[in-house]
Length: 167
Image 1 (cartoon, one colour):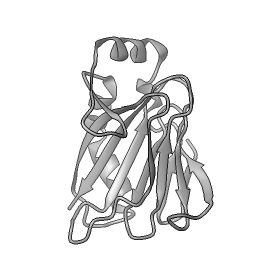
Image 2 (tube, rainbow, N blue to C red):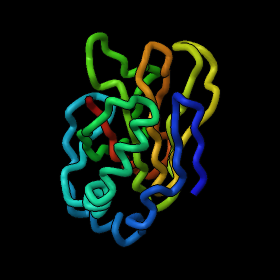
Image 3 (spheres, one colour):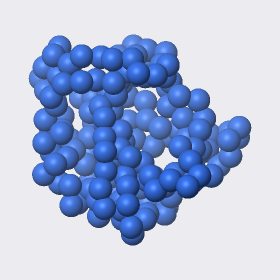
Image 4 (cartoon, one colour):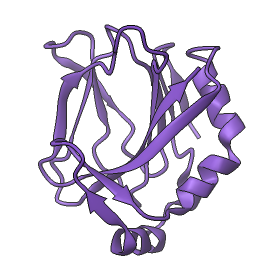
């Protein structure tokens, strides 16, 4: 596992890849229900082994988030699906007066898909893409300067677990 941390974004390559495989993915995709709760992506409702993995490693997951905010003590998550062409334009997930300032993503496709593109400024040039490989975990602080975007230009659906950490 390769870990990368710049005190704003923490990436752990393959963190959950022990529960990512073609068979697991096919089973999940064939049995989940996709619900469109917003314009940008779908929520995938079903049972994926990554959910038990997340529960088993909850303390570890929270300790990683605590590197960015020592007050973190819990999280909520949903499994999301980006269809071909779905995406979220550059944004920062920052909301004044909220205690949900740490976000996380686990990629659960069995093959590489597009990661999260990060920026130094809202309409600036991208500085890179983080994550996208099976089991990658990206945790980042959501603040006025944490601009990022996601899009699926691939011909396969992009499945991720998206976290909101709380204090």
